[in-house]
Length: 233
Length: 233
DNA sequence: CGTCCATTTGAGGTGGATCAACCCTAGTGG
DNA sequence: CCACTAGGGTTGATCCACCTCAAATGGACG
Image (cartoon, rainbow over all chains, first blue to last red; front, side, top):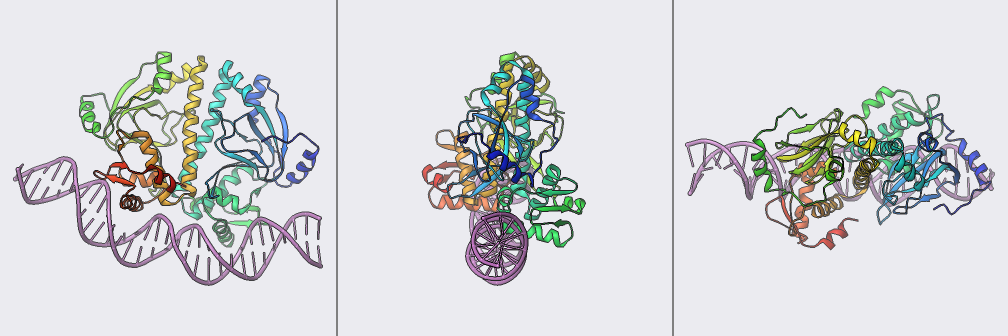
């Protein structure tokens, strides 16, 4: 929605958010585009559970997570929710080829993003083939994730889904062998097409089997990635 | 795989395939690219259940269905299958931004396609921004479908999935209010994340309720789209 | 220290899967 | 032209993985 203004709230946001997801030294996808063309990126902060944009809203900006985490999702009329992707520091989201966002986006925890105007990217892509190629590649990357996720949602068992999720999160946000999940069990369930109880039971079972360790419900250490891979079909 | 040669087999293919999916007067997406750049498209024929390309194979060609129908899918190691998309006459498939196909493709029935080399599209896109924009838009269209399908697979009931499927097929291939499905119940199940029995039961129930009519298991007439929409959540 | 919310755990219900006949129809060959 | 066959589709009976409902536990924060 972007009805907020840039304020000192950003500072508190950063402090609260930093305990979960510290900025990562990722290769900067924004840099690969914006930097290349000299587009200026603005910073912006959202608080936990704040909407960033709604489903079918005009796609005015493209975002990159600086710190925190974002969920994009679709809702059915009765409130059932499917989360499409979790966006973590370094990830670009909100990029559309057409005029509107097809999923809504919310901050999972206090989150800071960089954003650029969609129109400025379009303009850059209209003259620079390298930029156009990069935009296509980013959308293709999202498509790849969606295709993998369709297989998970359509055909994997609950335990296989949770194993896949853990390996994905381990790959994307593990620091020193430990991952700090920014999202709650309900979010995980809505991502995996399960209930929060089923997610919790699967995690408990993996804990009992010694495949993972907890330090608080959202601090997880994988103790046996090989066995987790076996559970992943 | 493209190990076949172009033969008179094409003719028989056409005759057998034509009773299911006649060529449609769609706006030609290939024309929008290939025609624009003067790329020559070759025709090619596949028989029912023949592989067009495999998962993780190099993406050498981009295809457009001329007649027939194609399924793209992923498999788990134990044979569970998730179909991502059904490609019908006019649809482009096999377009990749990266080097390999992420889903396998098979002809559902005898099928004729046009194909162009991926490299020639890449070359065209490297000099023509319009082409680059079109390729991005096509991938974005696939992403949109995948996102809608994730919601279906993760959160819809069996009846809602079948209702969604029928409305999609009605929109895409109904002629004179009737649709001729090229795919079997198992394909539909693997597309919707259900078993073939569950698909069959849902269709029977819709038949009993007078929402649809059959003329053979794969010839379906929707008699009440409004009620079907209500069942679709 | 108490409150609130996230998480875990338990008990029981159910939608869709599985297993099993049976039926229908389009080919096939006599 | 018709009987036979095979594969796809339907239907029935039963099972079970996951959901639902409920309660207890735990951790973070004021």
